[in-house]
Amino acid sequence: MIRLDDVQAFVQAVDAGSFSAAARLSSVTPAMVSSAVQRLEKELGVRLFIRSTRSMRLSDDGERYLPHARAMLDSLAGGARALAESRGEISGPLR
Image 1 (cartoon, rainbow, N blue to C red):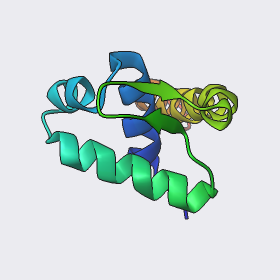
Image 2: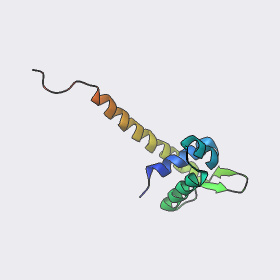
Image 3: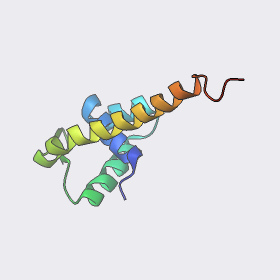
């Protein structure tokens, strides 16, 4: 099963440009970000990044998956916003 925190780590790594930068943004270790991306890659059965000792770039599969990963996270945030907004509305029968 795909974990949303792994998807979030993937998107953050893409946006930040490295696992280390993504880890700093999330206040976790680079190893935790790397492990999350590896779990996601294993679950999907593809390599999302092409890694070397000096660089990291998205693979073709990573490029294809990225918009879907962003959509998942946006949908999750949208659902949370919708629930938060509905709590502020007055509802129920008027007496």
